[in-house]
Amino acid sequence: MFRFRTESSCSTTSARTGVFDTPHGSVETPAFMPVGTRAVVKGLRSEELVSLGARMVLANTYHLHLRPGEDIIAELGGLHTFMNWSGPILTDSGGYQVFSLEHLASIDDDGATFRSVVDGATVRFTPERVMAIQRALGADVVMAFDECPPDPRDRTRVERATNRSIEWLERCVGAWHDHGGVESGQALFGIVQGGVFEDLRRRSVEATCSHDLPGYAVGGVSVGEGRVDAMLAVDASVPLLPADRPRYLMGVGTPEDFVESVARGVDLFDCVTPTRHGRTHQAFTSEGRLNLRNQRFARDPAPLEEGCDCPTCAGYSRAYLRHLCTTREMLGAILLTVHNLRTFHRLMEEIRTAIREDRYEELRARVRGSQPRL
Image (cartoon, rainbow, N blue to C red; front, side, top):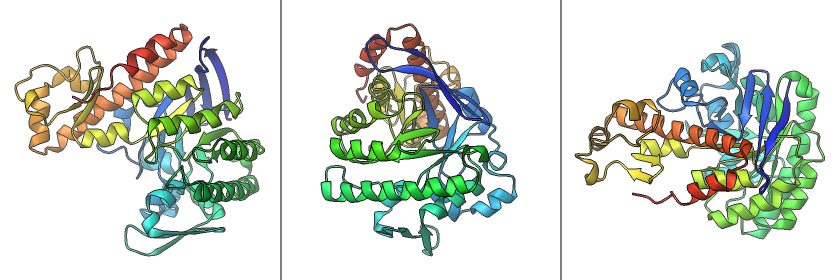
């Protein structure tokens, strides 16, 4: 039902290609998962996502619990039917909201209490409740409930969050097994915490991997720390994770993040970067990141990127895109989102090819050198 197999590897790094089999299809890795927080990748239909290269998407447990509610989604056939997506779906657990909605949340050893961002009502998440919500949503991959500390350098808070995440995972695993484990059609991934502290990361990996799970994730990165600290966390975690299971780096990132993390053995990524940047008029290209509101594009007849195979570059000029952005037409955000997602998926395709042909370092160097903002 769930299986991960490595197909090729790089001779000079830990980069690898593989295939992750799920009940709703197989995903070639390394792979990027677009974020559909409320069961939609903003502005795009499911068919468009497939044409851009997406094979697996992410949805948000917390927000879907608030609206429309997991019971309604279950009644209507589960997330796949609800959002008209036939491929694999991963749901996060709400652990990131413990961090991002810290001003609305209180945390104790049993779970977290939120004030709803919709109506201010009290929302209680425990490991068991989170697993029940994700079970009702019907995702292929469900994430363990964890605590994501806001500052990965604050050892006291990181250690407390790491210990809680270990204890909560134990309860998530129990709830998962109570409902059939992997035979339920859902794969539970554990999450490694530990901030930038190597000993805490090692302790978290050991505890997380003591459970035989279909996959493992590294959390607590991309929370405001710099790339150096993020890679410290990856270096302290990923090499210790089982090689025969998919390794998922949560909330990352950018093209440079991808090539650096893949070199360290990461298989799966998700991030709002391509979609959020599209909505704020920014496009990722081989020249770097372009701000389409800049005056210099006002008379530019060129596509966003020569040679790009996305629908935006096939039919629209930089001048027209700038016009859409400066007049706040919704089409501007949609077209830039289309381009950014295709750019990210095409990079993953290039990464997989470079690993197979054992020229990954060449690609890595090229991506490192193409990140200025213009």
